[in-house]
Length: 281
Image (cartoon, rainbow, N blue to C red):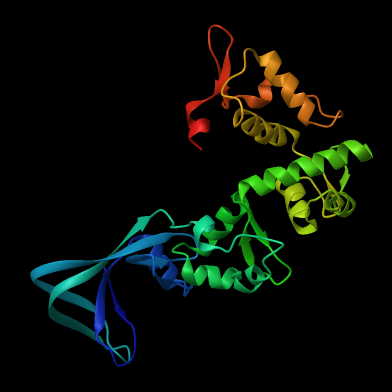
């Protein structure tokens, strides 16, 4: 339990907290209360975690607290309470697809409506650490103004096709792709420079530099495989699937069935299909 005085003139409020919040308050770290028009709930966010705040009714409960009064004098406070606030850890509430403007080269207003990271933190019911982690795993672009826009998966995969075609035409090694030159070249083939740059970074390995991309060929192959199954429910064999996958990739990349571990299932008859969890995505 903690007693929180929200202002110098207001009454104190009794809050039941988990130790993580208490530690953040004791270290004078920022702790935010965040509401959202999409839900009636209010959450409390530390730098790393999210907690749902709930009003808990009490009946004839008495509070006895010891500690220091103003000026450091010891004292005892006794009070009756009819309710207290409870904060319990929950999963962050993040839905970039519905809350962010969709990226579009034909809609200039999307850029002006794109929230920056501080605005995201003020509206998303999640901690800054959880927001940043979700941004890394989501298809969200950051424009030149620091605004965040949502990139639809279909647009990402369409741009990936353009990038791979560029890679084939120029003969660049998948482990040393010049980022700027490739993005500019892909833009000439119907893509968009910002999206092409994002796509290259999205499918890159951690050891890539700011100038050269080391392509994560396994991740690319898995994304392409998902697209292949969107038009074909099953393949008669792994050889047939790998043949189609090879046709989608530059000649420098030779796919292997092991790259698709956990993504495909093979029946006793050799028929290949997506696993149930992949089909549900």
